[in-house]
Image 1 (cartoon, rainbow over the protein chains, first blue to last red):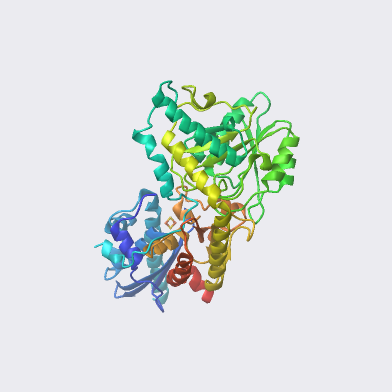
Image 2 (cartoon, each protein chain N blue to C red):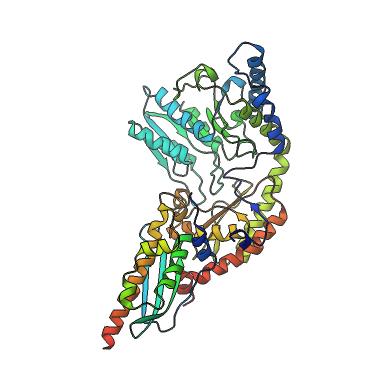
Length: 127
Length: 397
Ligand code: FES
């Protein structure tokens, strides 16, 4: 099997933003249909800016590293900016992934989209 | 920069079922056959005849250890080739008699993929299910036999969960019905007693690199009278059953490895069983929500396979590697098909538990301290990963 890049291993070794957020503004819960892994992403939003993000992931090295990276990438971004973050961007930020692991980065993108969706839902219902 | 992250230099190899290091005595025994005794054994002059002699001696040693005669052993490039040769060779040679093959659902890929290939060629294959411990029921074999059955192939012991099959019973069923019986002995040969007469098999596959010999060399026992169609065409080597100039250095190394195994086997089996049981007991005690996969006793001396709930296998393997421990997993994430281990699914594990599996295989150079170290490190790794797992969080709620 092809090994991981230094950057991926660095995030895997010290994943950023692990855990849950109490009273989050949005939660994304997605499963990977390919291999059966699961990711949960929590976001806190203030004035349309994502102020905090945390994750919990059941999955491989790539799944954990991309989870960690996506939380880093969204922090401080506006909702609209965050919506443009693709799995490709996450992968690039990690210095690439073995081709067989690309689907793991899709999980991160989907978790983010789903958390933002959830935020919209909560937001609208509150209005 | 990367290097400095690894504070400890301790490295512990616990993946002996994947491959073993060459014993230094094996390397020494191979040494003369690269530059000194290099002749082609098919030639008549002294250079060739020296090599031929070495090959004869090696074949004799291996045959004797197996309870076979030297003519019944052909050298191959390893377990995969031996299995391919046995399955396809017997199938093609027996085509006029029938087209049905019986095997199990937990075979090594070199057997199961050969079967799939043969299915495309018009053969019919029955894949027998196994029980929760990974054991084939001989009665099922009996019931699967038809008048078209030409070959039964069941592995001696499983590489993932270590289940040792009731080969003798299955072989006697095959013999009664006059059907050829092949067993993949790659995990058992020179680890536990393997004698072809005792087992009653017609074909048996072996590999050197699982028993402290070199990679790239293996053998197939083919009982006198069993017909196979060779799948490589070429010279007359190996009684025209396997063309290609023989790998003399590999053959000499293989024979040395067998010689060493003969010396050490009994004691080694005891030592490995002790370490295995210590590791199993330790994991089940120290890690809650863990379970043993496979049979507690009817398993290979060095095999430990556990599932550690709520966390994924590859991330455990990587974390253990960071602590210097090498082991493997049947998780979907580490397979190129992204399917969890077919063996773990066959014993009835749900996807999540197959996903959470870890295999440690213990061998000749494993020390008791190594096991203690794993038992110290593993609970920390599990704790770290569970704190990250959305499944474990749910559990607490
Ligand atoms: S999460 Fe399963 S392969 Fe990455």
